[in-house]
Image 1 (cartoon, one colour):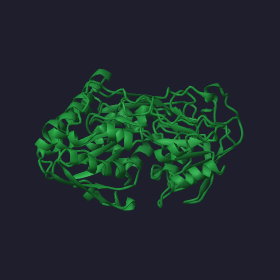
Image 2 (spheres, helix red, strand yellow):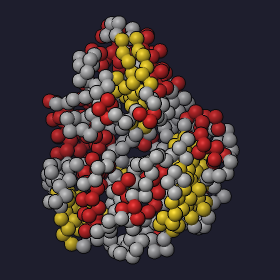
Image 3 (cartoon, helix red, strand yellow):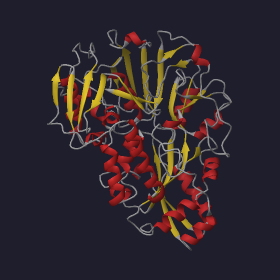
Image 4 (tube, one colour):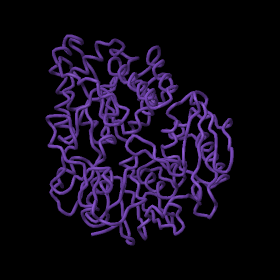
Length: 515
C-alpha cells in the first residue's frame, strides 16, 4: 500500500481522517502511516487485480499513455522513465544524472548502464533522444512539457550521454524530464506495441475492458526487489462506485479514484484499507477568475470573491473535514512553497464594500468530486458578502471539450491536480502558459515567470518560485480555497503500491500480496 515506505497515509478501518490539516474544522490529524505494512516483508507470487478509471479513447500507444488513469498505470509498468518525483525531488531511474550548464540552456543527461528493453536491445542515448523528439512532435497534452526543447539542436555525445539544447533558459528542466518520459527504442514505428524497459510486459488488452501483464525475468531493476507478482490484471471501470463495489465483492484487490463520500460511508469496514496521498500530492480547489473579462478586470471584484469565501466551511462541507484550508496559492507542502504567505481572511463585510450588489455566474461541472459541491456552497456563502451567484452546470463530458470557453469564462471552478510547483506555475500563469485560465498576463508576471526559468541552483530557484507566488497571492485571479486528498482503497493484503509523483496513477512496480 501507499504507506509501505512511509510515503502515504493509511485511512484504514475507522481512521479516515485529515492528515496534518491546518484547519480547525477538519477531523483530527492522522499520523503518517508506518502502520501494518512497515513490518511485512515482500513476497513473490500471486495476481493483483486493480481497477482504475478509463476513457473512450483508451490506447496502448506510448504517446497516449497519459490519456486515462488505467492507461497511465499500465504504462508505468511497461515503460520505464528517465526519472520520477518523490517528495518534490527528482529520483532518477533510467537517467543516472541530469545536470544543467551555467545558464540552463543546455542539459546533460547521463544514462544508467545495463538497462535492456523487453526485446533484448540495450538502452542507449539515441533511444532517449528519439523518444523526446517523437513526443515533442506529437499533438498530445504531454508534448507541451517539451515546448522549450530544441529537438534538432540536441545531440548524442556517446552511447550513455546526450546533450539537450533548449530554446531558452529553463532552470527547472530536470523536473520536466521526471514527468513520465517513457522511453522506447530508436526507430520504433508501432507505438502501440513499443518495447519497454519496465518490469512487466503486456500480454493482452481490451479497450474499455482489462489488461494482463506478466513480469520480466531479465528486468534491470530486479536487484532492488521487484517485480514480485506473477500477474497484474488492470480493469477499466468508469464509475467510482462500481470500482468500490468490485473491491467490496472481491472482484478487485485495489480500486483507485474513489470519492470522499464513499470513503466516509465505508470507513468502518474492516475488509477495506483506505489510502490517501502524502500532502504535497493533494489536489486544490479554486474559484478561477479571468482577469481579462468583466467584472474581474478591476482588482476590487477579485478581492471581493476572495473575501467572500468561507474557507473553513469549505473544508468542513466540501472536503467533509478531510482536507485543509488553502490561501490562494498552489503547492502547499512542496519544498518550493513559500510558507510565509499569510492566511486569507473570510471577510464578507469587505466583499460588500468592494463589489456592492455584485451578480456573478460560476461555471462548473461534476466531472470530479468537489467542483460542483464548492460552487453550490459558494452560492450560499456569497450572500453574506452581498453577492448574488448563480451556477451554470455543464455536463461532465463537455466541460473540457471547448478550450476556448475554458480560457474565456469569467468565473469557474477548478480542481488543480498536484504537479511540481515550478511546472504548475508555468503551465497556468503568464503569456506563454499552456492553460491560462486566469486570462491574459504581461508586465510584472511575465517578468517573474521569465526569472523563474533563468534561475539556476536551489536557492535561486526557490526564491524565484516565491516571487511568483507572492505576485499571484496579491494580484492573481485564482482563489485557491481548499486542498482535498485523493482517495483509493485496497484489500488488507495489498502492499508496495507507491505514488511516485502521481497518486491517482500509482506505480505498481514493487506491489506484492501478503496476509
